[in-house]
Length: 199
Image (tube, rainbow, N blue to C red; front, side, top):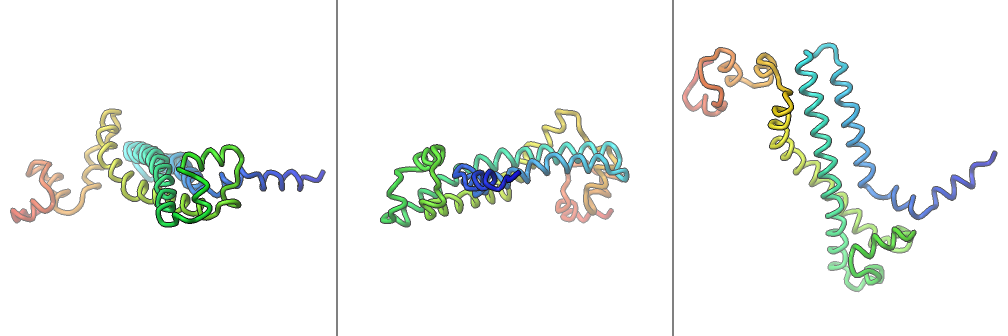
């Protein structure tokens, strides 16, 4: 059975080409893979205490979920930004004159138009924007949201580290001060240094 022609038709399909060339989906696939397998591998580690495994696995899963949400949000918005910047930088380019806005580009692609083959400059501007959006989402926004949202979320769900895990998680003098129970817990490392605290 010769499946070559069928594969050729699939590979050359404009919708498949547009999908495969879009960096949004490969990155999303990586995030989803991390959201599934990292928690699984963490929970399967026999050398980690059950409470620590549960906390780490839950935090990793929710972190990846936040990454996925911010990734799609920023990648799509930055595609529009990439198109707009391309229009401004190349106002006389014949390809950009074919579209008034990014919505018309998406309509063209949904109708089976091959944006890569017919308007490579437009596609390039959109892909650059998408890539910058992914970087902004995963390197800047998601970590900030992670630190802000996940602690209260995990606390609400009753997923916490026990006292020993909290001690091992904290560095230097701050950790020792908590273990000894000699000062209140909301002192920072720098504050301890400023009062010349000796652990």
